[in-house]
Amino acid sequence: MEHYDVVVVGAGPAGSITAKTCAKAGLKTLMIEKRQEIGTPVRCAEGVGKDDLKRHIQPDSRWIAAEVIGSKIFSPDGTEITMSEAEIGGKAGYTLERKVFDRALAQEAAEAGADIMVKTSALGLFRVGDENNPIINGLRVKHLGKIIDFKADIVIGADGVESKVGRWGGIDTSLKPNDIDTCAQFLVSNIDAGEYSKFFLGKTYSPGGYVWIFPKGKHTANVGLGVLGSKCGDGARPITLLQEFMKKHLPQGKVIEMVVGGVPLSGQIDKTVVNGLMLVGDAARQSDPLTGGGIINAMDAGKIAGEVCIEAENLGDFTTRTLGEYEYRWRATIGHEINKSLKVKNLLVKLSDDDINTLAHSLVGMNTATMSLPKMVATLFMKNPKLLWELRSLVG
Image 1 (tube, rainbow, N blue to C red):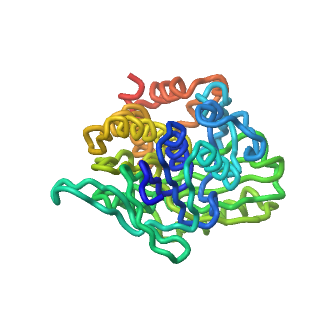
Image 2 (image 1 turned 90 degrees about the vertical axis):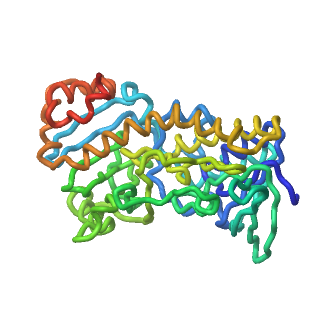
């Protein structure tokens, strides 16, 4: 069709949930994806919480690579803190097979009635109205070498960390070095992956970031790390650091796949809505600034964006008067959690490896496996008030 109610740019979790929500309500919906295959390349650690995921889609063995029972956190000197899944608010759960998972989400959007075009790149936006307050009402795309113009009441930018749609719409999505992690990840075989997700903290492993191990079966796991952009250089290359970690901790491991990419850790940006346009997921910088996790936030934001699109169509108003409801709703929920994570991230970046060891030692002898995350933070604060004074608002 030449005219759609909603056009979604990007077929990741945020885009697919937005498209499904809109199409299910009867809106004429198109979702485009620049790559020829939805779900590839995978630039994600692939971990999600069970309960969070079930809000959007029923788990399917086709795209669940492993089920984990909790998390283990290691300080630079090797002190271990274990947290069970039941006590950490569903943050553990599944390691996905994103190549299959993303396609399953796109399939649900298609079954709801959305049109989908792969190998289709967005080239630019169309505007109407006052030059000082224009309304976006469509976009130009390139599909298999052919230029096509689509009219749209609403355009959704779900085009990831490198989002062009936001910039075209006049939204500042720029990232400073302190606002992005440069990441590298290996899919590693020939190891004992275990049943826990593992996290290794401190500059010993990764300046301004951490190392993760997410099981993907008995003998396979995603092993990766992120280095804060401002810490890159001087030997702090993600690939080099990851290779060093492998030599020390997983010498028998065999790398069968490698991916690199960036994760936004900026916290909330000034705006994610203009007339006729909304941003969702990494394009809106909605990933968790502490963990870098973004799948669930992207899906939650996509659901909210879809519901606001439905309301806008009912009212026939595609300006920020109506679309601004999306801004309000995601900031009050997702944004609230992002703010808390940003405070913790900003503090952890300042801590030395000795400081992190001190925090870990203060929990030795305590049953952290049965301790909720808020209780653990409160306990750490009480035992280390000088180190964690910046977090006092989170434990008040």
